[in-house]
Length: 363
Image (cartoon, rainbow, N blue to C red; front, side, top):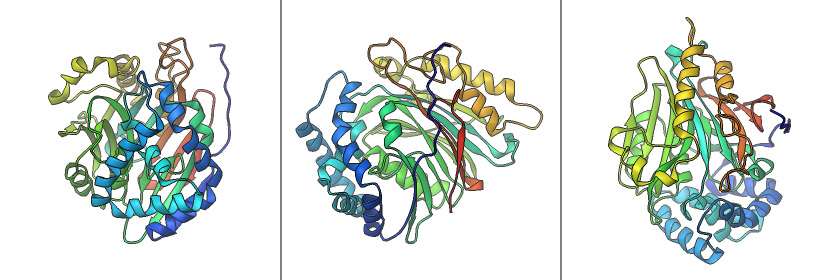
């Protein structure tokens, strides 16, 4: 490889607490500049990878429709968003669009996720990991935010401020990674980030599943979840939620196509929505983890090795800019390791092959 992109620094951190309104105000005040910038850029950046560009008016109509329903099921989250809007001085419609950005049409984005059960881990605790292959602009507008809401598990999440949740861990031993997935969408459903938030605020694996299955859902996506009870992978669509069995060895890899037997027809029906080299990345990830798994199992460092892999470079597990018209400007913006039992997240700010992982502790 001749390319060199080094961006070694920690993401900004913030811990907030109190009522939903208190939390929203604290986030809006602290990340005033980032929220203003990202809400100005969100449509422009979305259209960069969307073959059918949308206007602000169209985006706000979709967001408003979805948020009306979200207010019924998740009033606390809506209160937080309203408070963030007020504190940051941005129209609430802009934050609504930010939180429904993946509902506005088909946008090319991808990820490779890993789940490792406690019994298969060298540390004796389960972990989840992934690369986030997306818009590099988002890296400079991201942060690690810990929310301490009243009567709910504490959760820490890497995200763009203004989002209600993203990849993260909570205080009851749950961590969630995710993958864009090929399939149908419903703009009247609950936004994806609200479902992620519901999982992170759930008290148990059973409660998390109930939260997801009991609400109208907006799109097809994959949730790769590690819990105190073990790994749980959910392929989620507007019409169904399917649990994908983790291999008996306790190691699991997921990329950007459906693997549950009941959803594999999506791989033909929505073949154009499968992010680059999804099949190859899946098989490569499985093979690497199998090779790395020793007598004591798989370590977080082994996961880092997998997530730094360049077979098929530049459209490899560790993704780099390339000449693809639709997605060649994207890269692995971060690589993240979630160890919820230890209250720890490790994140590389940039491609993991040439950026060190920094450790963030939930307090």
